[in-house]
Image 1: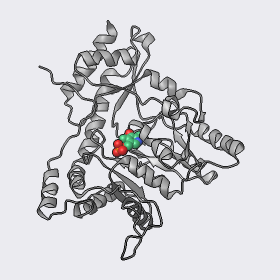
Image 2: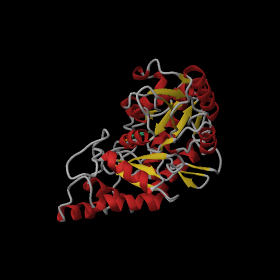
Image 3: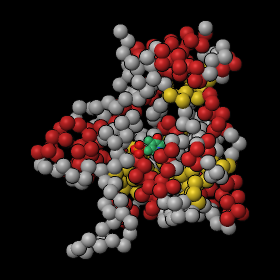
Amino acid sequence: MQKRIWLSLAQMGGGEQKYIQEAFDTNWVVPLGPNVNGFEKDLECFLGSNSHVVALSAGTAAIHLGLVQLGIKAGDEVICQSLTFAASANPIKYLGANPIFVDSEEETWNISPEWLEKAIIDRKAVTGQYPKAIIPVHLYGMPAKMDEICAIAAKYNIPVMEDAAEAMGSTYKGRRCGTFGEFGALSFNGNKMITTSGGGALICHTEEEAKRTMFFATQARENRPYYYHEHIGYNYRMSNICAGIGRGQMEVVDEHIARRRAIHSLYTEHLNGYKGISVKQNPSEEYDSNFWLTCIEVDSAQCNGKSADDIRLYLETQDVESRLLWRPMHMQPIFEGCPYYGDNVSEKIFERGLCLPSGSSLTDEQIMYVINSIKQYISE
Ligand SMILES: *Cc1c(COP(=O)(O)O)cnc(C)c1O
């Protein structure tokens, strides 16, 4: 019998247990230690671009601490890509600040530079102030238009908090995603590119910023012999056990990325252009997505009336997990009333998009089973 095919499962490399055993043997079962330091070094080597990395308990925590260090305060406005997971925007609310949502463009599905600039100009007109930060996202691993976004950010002197939670290993013009902004966030949640069973990291550009991040991540304790606090702190450091899993994962990260890209190629070869299906591609050679998840767009008029959600429901009957795209933030009850700038491109993408099983442990046979199931269903 065919086993259930999941969207994106964690895959162990084999070395993880060795690092965890070491932590037990040396009694480093705490939220710091040699594995945390080793994992951070591994990530810095991987990312290049003079990055300084701090391992944290979650990607959401990384975005939160990035915003804290950008000085975001209650009442400030922060621009965020609307088409994303809620974790990109929730930290804005943690700080009592107000999200301003911006639409996507069709090529990458990420924040539209054109609408970004319009939003910045309009907020200045409405409130007398520019927004205090910009959060672009590299959705499903696809790099956002970072040259344009960073140029606009620089023009108005607004820092960028880059959400690279889904884009570990993706590059834009040869540079790793997560290293473009003032700060960048990675996620090591169970279904991301690599896992630490739950975790994240903040990418900084100086040793100073990394130290500051650790300070905030460990309750903002001042350097005195007694506990003394001048800032609100957080308990966001990664444990030495989780970091052990991360070190094992870093031994196989390149293979995992290569496998996800190979899965995307297989979908492209057999499904792209079939009836009303198109498989999302890098817009040009400047973009090199990790293809964390392969996404398709469904033109139901050319698929015998079948929509993305119809395909999802059918795949479910075949024991295949697929998933609709992130529902834009400006369409979420929790963010009702937040300003939104755009032309409803993200809503249209949401309506026709579907994420297909893309985990690095999936075999070619399993991917072909998904492809053939979709073809059969939309031909009926
Ligand atoms: C997963 C994810 C996050 C949050 O990461 P966690 O480690 O789950 O907290 C943030 N942004 C995006 C776009 C994500 O997909």
